[in-house]
Length: 202
Image (cartoon, rainbow, N blue to C red; front, side):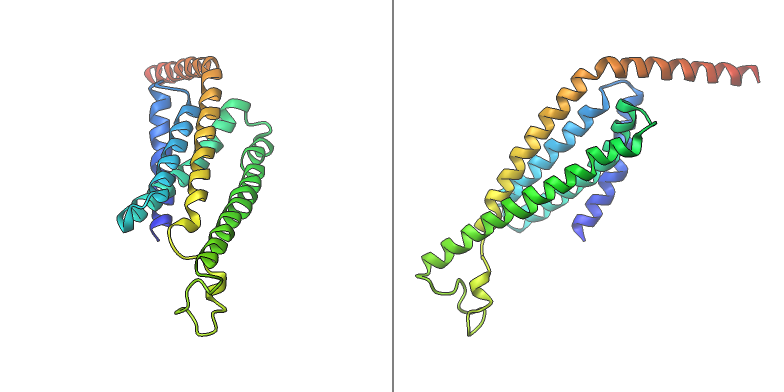
């Protein structure tokens, strides 16, 4: 529930804040996405540390806000940088393929490998006995379940590294596209002035 609420709030408020920054010409919009990636990295740092139940809630909510913020920004940035003629194909390149690769890399290979390694270490520390003998009398469930903070700690740190790399990459895109955004801001200012003149004549 907390993740869903943060996801929704991130989609609404980040879009509004990035539009405000864009209208006031504070920074190219890709830099807003870089800040979202930094927020996601911060969330996973909180989740990776042993911060207790409060840290869990804060980390989940912050990660949800950052996750929800990513997708509206990606849609708008794709349109602003490459136009709307082939927007669907360009967006799916940035969204669909990346999600597929990310889900396989993080959700499958990294998380599963870390979980399995920690489960084996837990069983070895117990002398080959089930990890939690109280979970079931036969030990069938316990032998396939990892317990404790370490089960996903390395996964969180891996995501932190990926988020920092993503933030650097998007910041580089923002730096390289600053001329494009200056031209866009100038055209938008001209368009606004023309509309104001038409209203004044009416």
